[in-house]
Each structure stands twice: as structure tokens, then as C-alpha cells.
Amino acid sequence: MDIRAVFGRNLKHYRQRAGLSQAALAAKLEIDRAHISSMERARQNVTILTLWHLSLALEVEPALLLEYRDPEER
Image (cartoon, rainbow, N blue to C red; front, top):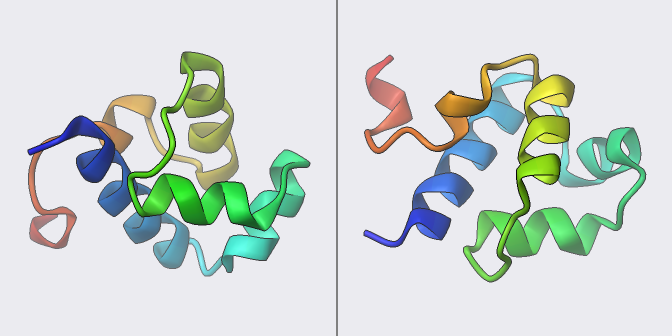
């Protein structure tokens, strides 16, 4: 599986778990909502810095966003 797809699935899971819309998460990061959408759809390469900022905004460890397993199993 493509790591971008793994990341996108995990990002969406933790965003929803946090009760945030794409727009709300984008506002926290001061980026466009479309950027969040493209990351969740595995259309965007993500930098380490973006990964870090997302983990802080979602209050999860950065590694969880890259973990290759079904987040529903947690």
C-alpha cells in the first residue's frame, strides 16, 4: 500500500476522532481546506514539518499518522 494512502486514511480517522471538519483542521494549521482533502485522498506528498503540525493539532503522536494498520483496530 502507498504510504500516502496509509497517511491519508489515518489523518482522516484522527481528524474525525477529534471532532474536526477538514475546514476546522485547516484553520488550525492556517492552510487551505483543499490541502487537507488532498492529503486525505493520497494526492499530496507531506513534509515532515506538516506531519509534525498535524500531529500537534490532532494531539496524536506523529508515528500514528504513518502506522500501517487499520486505525479502527485501536
